[in-house]
Length: 278
Length: 320
Image (cartoon, rainbow over all chains, first blue to last red):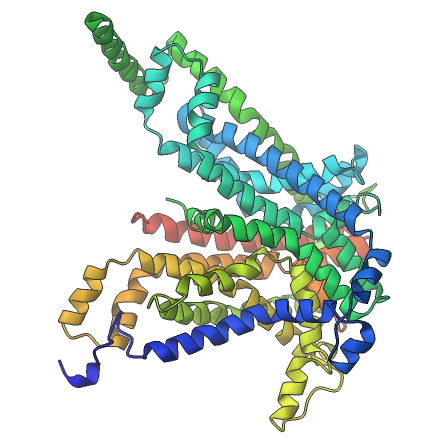
């Protein structure tokens, strides 16, 4: 081995630590710039924004006057939490059944559910819209919640089934022998064991639903049920407000999902890799 | 006491034998197995109902209605007429071309995260912090990303001013004003957005490569570049495939909000992709039949990609 290889050789890279750090910092700046821009602009009035300096709360005041921020945050929360609750319930039950209570044809059901993961939202959105309007669910939270739940539950069920398969059969058998019913096994043994996976599903779905535009825009079109993401997009499309106000709106709409991300980052990363299947 | 325990162990073993034999031969069903199957059906019913009524039924309807001139209320069978119309429509080909242009972004959306993942994997000072920062955009809605992106690509935006600073002409109308630069702007924003997700996938992949392998390579005198190209990239194969397929599907099906906010599909049809065209045809033009047909085309593309992924995954079943 020659001196050419260097002593800081690791994983085959001959770059010095300093250069690596510099590149990583540069990438971090590129990734964080939009957040800086958002906050910087949001805390300026329009005049200050044009000048490029200054600090003020006027844009926030303006935002609250053009956008029913609290109402829409509450609407977003209802839709998101409702969806997360339904998905957790159906995917945990489904995963338990498909992994541990196998019945005639259960593997077909599993393959069928996994196959629906391939259906893109845009391919079904038109019949979905027509069907739900026929039963009068457009403009009601439950309509959007059902659509989001259907879209999210195949992956969640796949994840929970995979997770429950890791639970040893002996554990269930012992519980059956002890006289526990299958429903009680589910509540007392399976659900408590699945808490990490439940967090993963919840965080993934929370972020997806909170950030979605298309479903919320079509299924909750009226101002009284509008979500914050749709409210923001509508505000932008109308082109009636200036950039600092839009940035304040962007920031406030992104905040809940960012907070969830910062707290449950680990679960989210787990979910991403679990998606690769086993 | 002792005998009770023995009995329990015996019955547990017996139970285990029954359970395993029953999963193997379904014909011999004991009351216990029948009860279990009944509970199983009950537990899986909610998710099955949800999926059947809100995913399977609409895709069947979409396929059916794509052969009609549906307007949301009434429909008449027109056979393949809608598809024939699409094939001869310049707009349809323009839209597919836009999708194809976005595919050019995919190598960048893989290669840049892969390179950065190699750097992160050196575990320098603060690497966990960098990982969190890179992954952050995953939590941000495309609506917000698009909103900031508009400002970045605007006539007086950062990009234009940066170019002027370098002595190059800026962009008087802003980059979103021309089809070619607008689709490029969408592509760049797309690369930025998926950067974090793909980086995390690769970092996770690299963590699965044992240090012994790399040590062995080093002892054998492999240089840095050889280690990366001959050892790490082949070992990351599964992860690269996964990132590739997810990014591909994202490019086809998840850019609606970004395009809606950034360009509205314009100028003209300059940034209208297939998924955006479905929305435009159905909800702006009221052409539900055409929209359904476009949705079916999109479904076939995504279905094809997914089958390709399944084949890759079943070929390589090494544990993570």
